[in-house]
Image 1 (tube, rainbow, N blue to C red):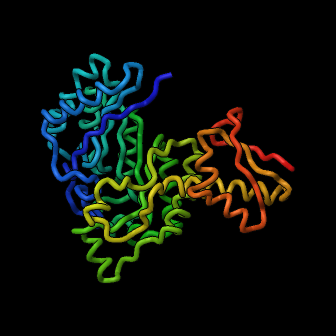
Image 2 (tube, rainbow, N blue to C red):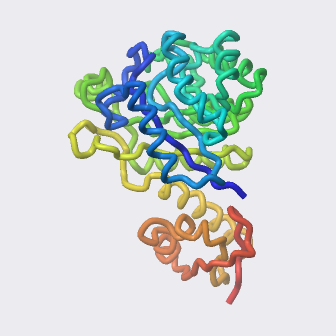
Image 3 (cartoon, helix red, strand yellow):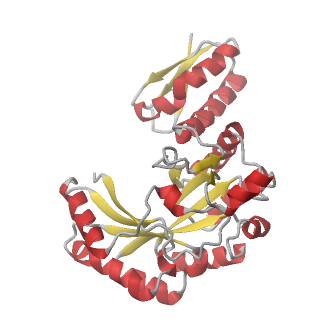
Length: 333
């Protein structure tokens, strides 16, 4: 079985109309410049020297709106990858872009260069939230872009955010369900953070925008993760990597904590364990899970064990690799 590896190329804000209230890609990615063609080629070569030939290797253009670039520039980047695709050193290409930068011509061009995955920065499927966030399109544009991407047999990814201006837990759930309905095969969930030098920072300083608390962000993300998991959708990422924004003072406010994803996954496991205890009694000794799920099932700093201890329940989480990843079973005293 092939393992999966990604060669990331960050193009901060390239193709972006720079109208979103929350965005400063240079702060988010920790990268202040756009790599030139020679740098991209060198980066690909350097990454390939560390990767095994049997891996499924994907080249990913992140950080900008790739298909909003001038067509010649899009093709220039893709032409760098072409020899690696032809020699099968790279298996496929992933791009991220805006829903309003997708059309038949673009999709035909991307297909010809071996692009396999298109991730749309959807953020919300509520028109008012999109307007207040400065996204510059309505939900109908997202639906049409998703339809076209599926029609051309690309793998569709969709990114959403929680805590946007005008957002509510109910609107976020609606967005998640719409992402499922539109056929996304992969998703990203990001809680909105306030960064320096953005319109959102001005709103935050005036008190007109209040970010989610960490507790609420974790709970909302857990609700959404459950929807995606039940639909069989791969969740690529939950929460931003700190990159350099913590060290440079670029993060102003909002629900950032280390290992945000593990906190979210731990809450999902906690809910599942609690439901099992409530339905089958409290004489359980604990739960057995696959080794790959152990850390999330126990929770950061044993948070789930402590949660049940506070309820007077002393349970253990044990490894049993006969248990399918994502499943569990209870054992009794």
